[in-house]
Image (cartoon, rainbow, N blue to C red; front, side, top):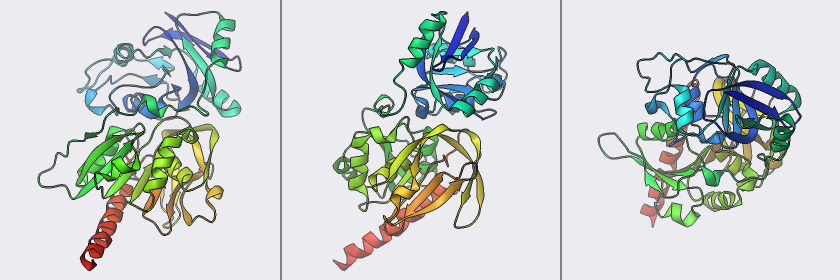
Length: 373
């Protein structure tokens, strides 16, 4: 079956369908990871986006349900150079193509993804349509241009859970820390990492209030990754503004951007975003460089936080954008990249331990204050 990917500037890519038949619009972005496609497909941060992989061969090890990162895929479409019809891996449960069809996600293969990537790098990320139903280029171009895009759009409401739930602790003995996770599109490996460090994790819907979160009496709150424009999430920003200073906060990706906005800063859209598992990030305090997994199209303007007791902690070595900051007086820190990886390297995993240390210090101060009174 023929499939077409048409960008809003008129660029056309013709290929073959290997996912679900249908038609979807979204912002087309490229991901530079060589593997880990099932984690990428199931990352809720890709809601509203059509993902093109720069590595030429995808699908060769199939899909393993144990390694997915959310309850289902939320991306709009998947584009590859070559789809491997033969999947060989001991843990394989089904093929990539079958998984996409099962979840209603269109896929296109046989296009020059390197050409697409160079085009996006030159022109910037843009709206597009992926279709197996329509072959009329003028019609497809109108659909691409009519896409709402990402700016000003709340996509978190489509990926967050509707009711709070407890993540299985899975360790013997009692949990040492009680953590509330505000789910803006959380990846499962974030929850796994917290549980592995002795945290009892409760996941809250993104529209939860400060009061509802504090009812849990958490030792810390983690603000998760998620899709779209952080400035469109006023209800989340307001909740986080109320939480600042009341409990330790750790933000990842969209959570990092939300904290920046809650502290009075601004965010802006990147030309083509950071998507992949090989982005070098420097920690300013130690000079250590970590290779990180990233997936974001917006960034915090660190200059907008000048005079707000905020210190830049990490920078991206590719374009010098802000990759992390902390509050100088309050227990608040955040990073733009994904320390939980999945896929990607584990260089930045230490940040979860830093969060635990921050909670431990905060608990000690809180308990000492109670004793004095």
